Length: 121
Image (cartoon, rainbow, N blue to C red; front, side, top):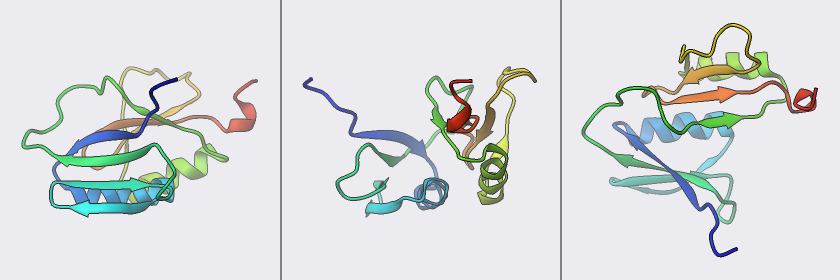
């Protein structure tokens, strides 16, 4: 294979705030910081990472691409991430789904799935 995923680019207004939020959510660290980009990741050689890039416009509409996060304890992680600044959002997922849809402080949707041990059930 000639390609591999290097990083996920996220448009943002508050780069430091978004980097802090996602570092806390994922237990990652800031790998590079500049006024025009902040890169975070699990470690210097652990890819993919995320890069936050400044944009003048706000988010409009539902994301066409989002992150799915796999927890050990879904309810605990949902509450922890909400306490960090996320909020629950409705993107039309209905009440009978096994995942929880949240939005980060700038409105980007992501999902917290049911625990890994129950994914095959």
